[in-house]
Image (cartoon, rainbow, N blue to C red; front, side, top):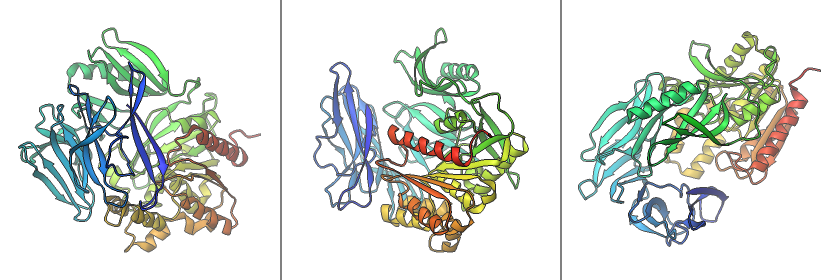
Length: 553
């Protein structure tokens, strides 16, 4: 199955969106069918349309959620039965406007439905184990606290990720009465990333986060196989992707010091590895990637990644690019990062700090970022730079900061709140005006949406903390910038509107600061198009060569 999306806008539909489509390719017929395209009654704006929650091998039918309704209606999230033969679908089970998730067995029988009512601020789970809908879970909350992902092998329980102590762990919920047990999967000092499931959402393995991914398989021999792989590639990330039906071969991805996203086939009998394809086949040299722990002010441990220049002879007094990640609920790992490696190939050391607010390393690190945009979260980035300087790696006079999305905000915050640290600033799709960001979210999703509640939880309340939000918005501190600034933004960005960069551009120009703006035509938030991604790299390269060259002449 193939997924695709396209930026669209239409009258009567609030805001722009990424319209998604799913295709199935028939290997024998060498023919592509567009799934659900010939189905009547679908809402004209679909996101996540390629999602599959089940497959009936006997009838060759997929079970796919989709929005149902007319152009001016409030759509319902129904479950469709879709024939692989021609891609046609029909409603298999009706949901509600508040429905967000479906679970079925391998015959397509509906097991459960998950709803989140944003107006009532209530998370509910309904079971059909008895043949009739029964409410088995109800929790009053503005933001869902649990995330249902899988069904137990015997179809008696749902499995979900939730917090326990300092770790995200896995729990079970009975489909009979909603009884919750667990944690049934948990590891100290790391979080559950997600559950790997088959097409019918049966658990295959639990994936844990950290500097490199690790797994817990239900099968003992599978765990032994992965341990051997991890030992074979100890300084890279090894990801399990799939296996043959006879269990004898695995498809894996090796990313990091041992490969630029190298896909390999493992023969489990001989432990032979066969290279298939690489994401970046032209890459012949990889800058060394190291995991380091940085002690930030106040004593908190900040897990970080340092990538050294491709030229291994350069190890001291290096120019540095601080590269904070997006999210901020995300994290950097020991893997091949195309942007970090591009900068390393140009001769820069690259520092990626998992600052407060990052996921993957425990709830304490994640939640300590709440309310700390532009404050302790930014201090963690600054402290990471100072640690590299003190270790002798970095020339303190040749440090730039660069980032995308939240990382773009962090780059601008670095220019606004610690201008003495940075020689240049590069912000890609960055947030500059937080009150404007929250206002845009309310317009896009609606005031009662959990996304709005989430942003106000981790940043600040737009009604009671308005002055605070202004005080952490870089757009209000353009006069404090010392370094030249490069702003880049896709004009089809549906996550951070391009207005954020244009507002920052206007403020910096008014303050007579050195600023350049590159508008990436037809580009989304993720720089999905290769042409505009290359245009971005060319603009970054030219900017760095001018304002912080990697070599001193």
